[in-house]
Every structure is written in C-alpha cells, then in structure tokens.
Image 1 (cartoon, rainbow, N blue to C red):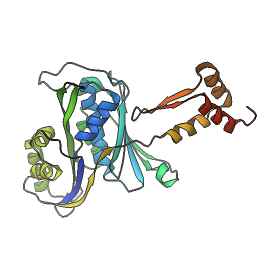
Image 2: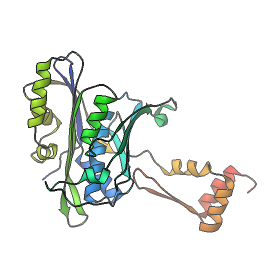
Image 3: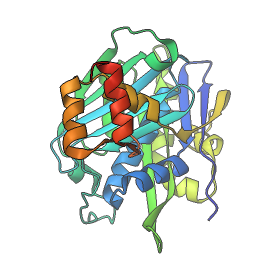
Image 4: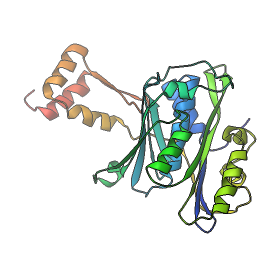
Length: 307
C-alpha cells in the first residue's frame, strides 16, 4: 500500500460550535520509530502521542509550541512530545525497547506499557523563533487508561473544560530490513463548545462511536477530509486550514556546541583529558554530535582564554 502524505486538516462545523481536526502521521511516526529504534509497542505509544501533539499544535498561534509529557509508572518510563503550529513534531520515549505481548484483542498493549501516572500539557512561546520567554501554561490530569487517546480527551475535557473526543492509532507491518515499519498512523479530534444543542451532541456521539479505527480508514486510502466526513456523520464542515506535517527537530551542531560552551571550564578540561573529545545525543531525534579534541579546545579557549 502506498502511504499517504502526512497532512492535517483543521475545520469547523455546526456554525462554529464544533471544532474538528484530523491528521495522517504515518511518515513522521515511522521516522521517529526508525530514529529511536523503538519496539512495536513503543512505536504505537509514541506514535499516538506524536499524533496527539500534531492535533493540539494545530490550535496554537504561529509563535507557540505545545509539549505533551507522560510521567508514567509503566515500563515505558515516560513519553515527551513537542509540536508547533507549523506542523513540526518531535518526541521520544524514555525506554524505547520495551515490548509487551499483544492483548487478547490482538492489539498493542499500550496501556500496559504506560501504566498510571500523570499527563502534563504545556503551552509556551517558541523561544527559538521569538527570542522571548514567558511562563508557560501547564495543565495536568491523572492518566486514566494509558491508551493515550482517552487520556488526552480527559485532559481537554477536565483541564481545559472543552468536551472532546479523540481517536489515535498506529498500525505496523513486518519489514525484512527493519523488523517492522509503520504502515498507517493518524488520528482525529472533535470538540464541542458551550451552546451546542443536545441533539448535535447526541448525533456526534453516535457517529463517533460508529466510526472505524482510524488506521483502518487510512489503510483504505482515506485522507483527513474523508476521516472527518466519517466521524461527523451527517454534519458538514468548513475547512480552515490544511498543512503538511513532518518529524523535525530543532537540534543542530551549533546548538550542541553552545551547550558545551556553557559548561564549567574544568568539566571541559576533564572531557579533553579523559575522553579526547565529547559526544552529545539529542533525546528528541537521536542525532549524535561529536566534538574531537580540536573542537573541544576551541570551545575551552572561548570559555577560558588562558587555557
């Protein structure tokens, strides 16, 4: 099956009383799985969280970013995802190799991998784009299921007081070269605002309940528009935005160098003496930045010209 491009559609329905977003995230989830060499179970958990980040990021201002943080008790240890309003998403799991047997329904045991704990959502200005810092808004709720979609819906309903339905999915297939690959990933989010009629709420609940798994729809060739048509049932919608999504990290060699330059000169001398250089690995994308002895001496001279 040819994979659809990663794209997100943001729309409104029922005269603005319903907000809806749908996204295909197959390629970016596969990229994250490849970079972090995740197990199938972790790919499902991380992929769902990456998709949730893309959905929430679509509702931000252009200069903002959102962080979803799961501090959990399960063997996955935790998940961190960042997304912005321009379609850039990145993230990682603390223990990427954790794998569990399939459930009785032959599904990934994401709930077992996540366990309990807390879900945090932080909204803040994107410092690297604006150069400005302001205190982030942070909301949190207990993890209620560990399935990610239910937890994000619970957060939006409880912490932000917006009744929300969230569907997230990741489907993988065996692959000869990489053990497995992500065949389909995506999700949708539907929210109702105060003043919407009980009839609309009842119709939407019935329609969403009857909607197939999001990965099933994607594997049938449906894009975000078709997914929204299916989830909304008889209600039409007006598209406000359509944009590409991508796995993208803000790390770079220069940024890693600045981190080194902020260290105490004694630490830099110890690295030079004991290791003959330094190596930094980005948690978000698993990129490795290596600094040989000459690189490290140059950084040390900037910190301490007498070195």
